[in-house]
Length: 344
Image 1 (tube, helix red, strand yellow):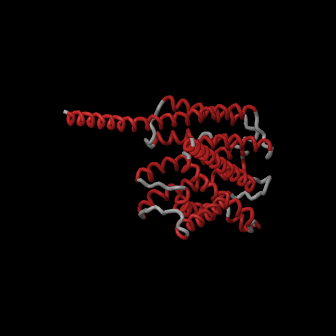
Image 2 (tube, rainbow, N blue to C red):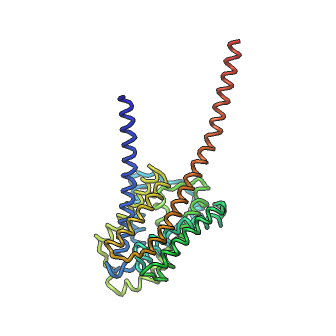
Image 3 (cartoon, rainbow, N blue to C red):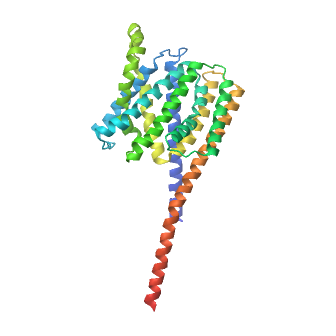
């Protein structure tokens, strides 16, 4: 009974830890999104400089990642040649910088709730780009599901009270760049046996992002910042905001490492609904019934997509086990025949 009790306690502890990792990730992801909205929105903190905000995040995260990898040596660096860095990491850094720039820019024009609804198109973009790059197999049922998600988002957009065409273009652009980045990670890094966790990813990618963002920053935001008092930063606001952004990357590392990427996808759906509720109740953004019907349809499509991915993963694991089971059976048969010969 002692053994059974200790086993039971161990399982309960593991479940509680998993829920804790999920809760920490949801809280930090929620905080970063709302904090960015607060800083960039002209009706709130009124600092509408998304490139500058992204560069502050990248500078802070790159510095902390450098300390963790090179100074404190808490995270092992990846062995990478200069050619691999230039051909693989640099393109991913360029796409990441564009994705962050456009997604942060969207907060100036759109409500938090509507942005979360538009983000439901991410599986559609990842699958479509994956098919284009031949990393995904075209399946009619999957494409029908992608169309149902797109229809749901279109209905949500139709019912949006604060629809802004430029804001929608920015957010959709961010989704496309992020989806392309995720597919290229598989093509350029995973295929070469290179796996980056969130810390090593920041260590290698954040400097690239800074370099790529510097050019548009000089022409788009620097003149306005130079001519106004906006260059004088509130270190408490921007320091805590950057710390939250870095902590979110650590939380991703914990959540995926201790549970799975699928768990993060499911947690992301919960976070989106919480953000919609927060946006409606606290920020006082208008959420219409048509918004909810459209996002509900998109949500069902995303949930079905995640379920299909889980079933495919289970089937793949089962196929791996079948040859092992056959091999074990053959070994046992050979051992039995051998024992039979020895008895004779």
